[in-house]
Amino acid sequence: MGFVPPPLLRIRLSLALLRATALELAILAGHLLLYPSGITSERHGPTGPGTARSADTSGHPGTSVLPVQEQSHPPVVLLHGFIDNRSVFVLLRRSLARNGWRHIESLNYSPLTCDIRTAAELLGRHIDEICARTGHHEVDIVGHSLGGLIARYYVQRLGGDRRVRVLVTLGTPHSGTDVAPLASAHPIVRQIRPGSAVLEEMRLPAPGCRTRFVSFWSDLDQLMIPLESACIDHPDLLVRNVHVSGIGHLALPVHPAVAASIREALEASESEALTSGVVSVA
Image 1 (tube, rainbow, N blue to C red):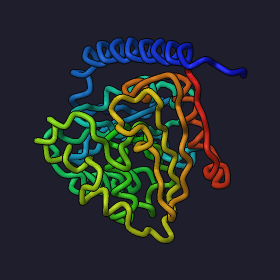
Image 2: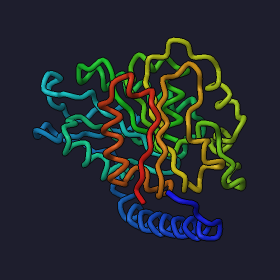
Image 3: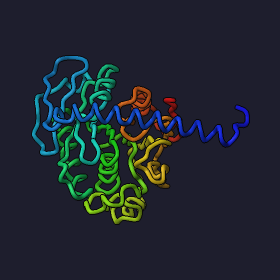
Image 4: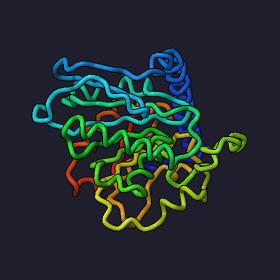
C-alpha cells in the first residue's frame, strides 16, 4: 500500500469511527429489546445437535444434556459484561451450536455484584457443577468485557486453570481502563481502574498456569482507554492477542467474523495459541 496523506488518513479514520458508532447504536437498540429475555436462566433438554443449556451462578441445575462421549468439544461457558446478561450471546451461541458445539452454558451473575473476587468464586463453583454434571474435566470460557476479567481472576488466582482449557476474552480491560470516571462510585468499576488491587493481583507470578488465553481487542473500542488495555501481557501465561479492526465494544460478541475467530481459537493447538492474530471486519 502506498503513502496515504495525513488529511486523507484522518478522513478514513473518521469514517471508520462513524460506521463503528452507527453499528454500536444499532446493536445497543437490538440488545435492549433482547435484554428482558436474558434476565432468567435458560433450560434446554437434550434435543440433539445444537443442544445448549444455560443457568445462572446461583447453581440451580437444569435438565441433562448429551452424554460426554457424544460431544466433540468441552462445554463452553459464556460470561457477560457489567450490568448485562446472557442475552448478549444469542448470536454467538447460535454460531457455536451450528458448528458442532453441543454444550453451551450462559451464566448470569447479579447486576448488584460489587467484587470481582466474589464473582470469580461463584464462577468456580458453577464450573465445578458443570464438570460434575457433564463428566467433562475441563470447560472453555468466552468472557465479554468484565466477564473476561472475572474468568481470568478465577483461572489465575483461584486455581481455575485445572478446570479451564481455553479462556477467550472480548474487550476485557486486562490492564484497566480510564473510561467514564464518574462511574467510579460503583465498587466494581473502581476495580477495573489501572492500578487497582485486583489488577495488581493479576500481575503477580502465575507459574505453571495451564489455561490458554486468547484476548480479542478492537482498535475502535471506545470503552478501552488505552485501547491496548484489552491485551494480556503476562510472562507466565500462554497468550494470543487478536487485533480486531473496524468494530467497537458491543459488536465483539455479536459480529460473525469475530465468532468465526472464536471458533478457531477454541479449536487451535497450543502452539497456534502463541501467535498473534488480526480480524478485519471493515
